[in-house]
Amino acid sequence: MKITNRICIIITLCICILLQCSGAYAENFVEVARDENFIVYIDLSSLKDQGEYVTVWEKWILRGKALEKEKKISGLEFAYHMFSYAYKTNIKESQIISRYDYDNDGMVLDSHNWTFSPYEFNPLVPGSIGEFLWERVMALTNH
Image 1 (cartoon, rainbow, N blue to C red):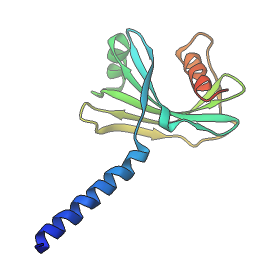
Image 2 (tube, rainbow, N blue to C red; image 1 turned 180 degrees about the horizontal axis):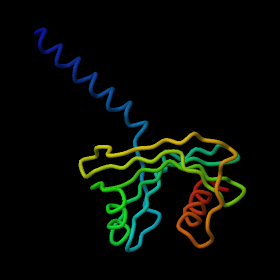
Image 3 (tube, rainbow, N blue to C red; image 1 turned 90 degrees about the vertical axis):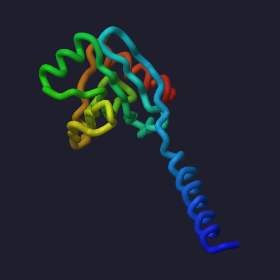
């Protein structure tokens, strides 16, 4: 076997191994809410039960009037937001940890990370999308 064939085989095997390993961190988004202003997905692979709270990544696709309002306020032409939230398990409260705004090409337009604190949770408004998402996250984590 020629040396170039061996190199090609080794490179191919390395690529296969890397692709296999990267699958362990694959996103697993499931749609949990939709109306005329947004579609919300939860990344099931990101759910982490920390006992007193659960963390999760959410993907928000704004549309309609919500999209128009957000673009007017931010001045950005984004396609979607990614949020990392922490939800208390014993009471309907949440805390935002991170926010990333993406364009249609998947490039980050803006981002912000907040310092997590177990004492900085905010009550969720009854009947709001936040309360609905809290209920979904609790159901998915058997709380």
